[in-house]
Length: 225
Ligand code: IPE
Ligand code: IPE
Ligand code: MG
Image (cartoon, rainbow, N blue to C red; front, side, top):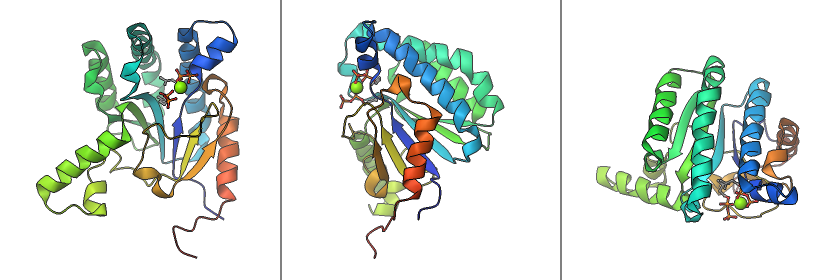
């Protein structure tokens, strides 16, 4: 039996389909997706997770129409304005993985402010993956490791965006897609994977608890026997 997970990551997928099923604009799916994030953050407080990583925007999501990217950026800015006080008050340390400098100036300033404000917090680390791609991260880490000397598993891992986080234990994807979509490729080497058909706006802390309960019943071998 595995101990409880220290680090859980979630590919929050299915906002568009959630909206389509209800004949609503995609933006409404994203808005409800943000509400699911807010409720999840409230729900996980007692769970004792050391780290939670949420995939919010991939390096490939720039392929979407400009109006959808605008909607997502606007929601992100609004979320920081409305929820940062609560997040900071709960001892959460915010972290960004990926390169958020690609978003507009106002978004970058809000994100940088949120990072600075929560940097000294010692509770759960909440990593938001923004303009994140696992392959790009590995390339960046390999270049940085090479600039300092030999590339080994350890020196490369020390330059990943997640270097200061516990190893990834459990990776969840919503919406029924069974793929990683360039998320945490290195880190998921021995993570347990959990796929659910639930669309992201419908995902609650109870679904997370179910995945964690399933995780607890798995035997992790890491190649041994
Ligand atoms: C996930 O929902 C949110 C982001 C990728 C930003 P989608 O927008 O991918 O929703 P589907 O996959 O089209 O249902
Ligand atoms: C992955 O979802 C990215 C996020 C959830 C932010 P996508 O909807 O972009 O993935 P694909 O395109 O279906 O693989
Ligand atoms: Mg999707």
